[in-house]
Length: 277
Image (cartoon, rainbow, N blue to C red; front, side, top):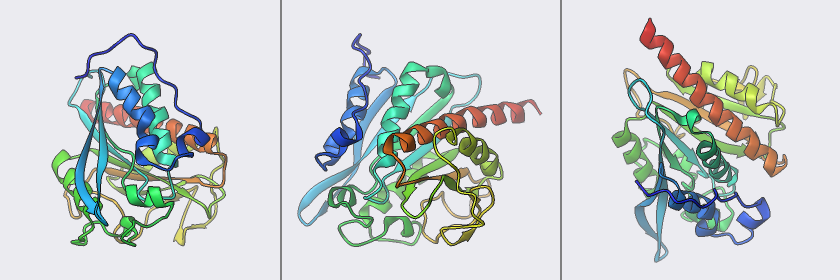
C-alpha cells in the first residue's frame, strides 16, 4: 500500500479543466493525486499496445476498503468504452474522493476501476477506437482489438462478484440501465436509479435504445457488450448505467456517484442476508 500523508484530499477539477486538454493523462490527474495520497488506492497501467506507432495502455486502479465481516467482494467498474463518453471517468474520480471521506461505504470491498477503456477514442473525441471499432460490440467474439482482449483477461483473472459499466447516451432524456447476469442485478439497479434520480430524471419510456424497458430498466442488450464470461453457472451481477449526455455534466457525475454508492450498500446488505439464511 502507498503510505498516507497528511495532505488534504485533492478536489476533482471542473469539467472544463478536466477536458480542456484532451489527453488521458490530464483526465486521470485527480485519480493519480488520490492514489499518491491514499493508503487504500493504487493505480497501475496495464495492457500496453500500439496504434499507428504510438504506445498506449489501459489504466487500472484498485481501491481496497476496510475489512468487513465476510469474504472480500470484488467489483469491476468500467468507463469510457466509447471515447466520446468521458462522464464515467470523471464520476469515478468523484466517487473515489467520496470513499476517502466516507470509507464505510466500501467496507468489505475490493474495487477494480478501469476509467479509460478506449484511450484513442477519448483523444480523438470519437465513439469508436482509432482502429474504427465500437469496443462495446467486441467482447467474447475472439476479437483482435487489444483493449478488449486486455479487459477480457481482467474479467477472467479477477473473478468479479459484480460488473458495473458507465455510459452516457446523447439520445436519452433521462437515466436508465441494463441488467444481466445474477438475478439480483435488477434489485441493485432499481435502488441505484432511485437514488441517482435526486440529480437527474429517469427515462420512463416503454422502449429505450431500441429495447423494451420498464421504469428505466432493460433486460436485453447488444451482442458483444462488456459482460462477464458467457455461460458461467453462477454469473456475477452485471449493471450498465446510462446518463443523459445532454444534461449538465455535474449532475451526471453526481447521479453516477450516488448510483455507485447505492450499489455497494445494497449488495453488501443482500450478501449479509444470504449468509444468515
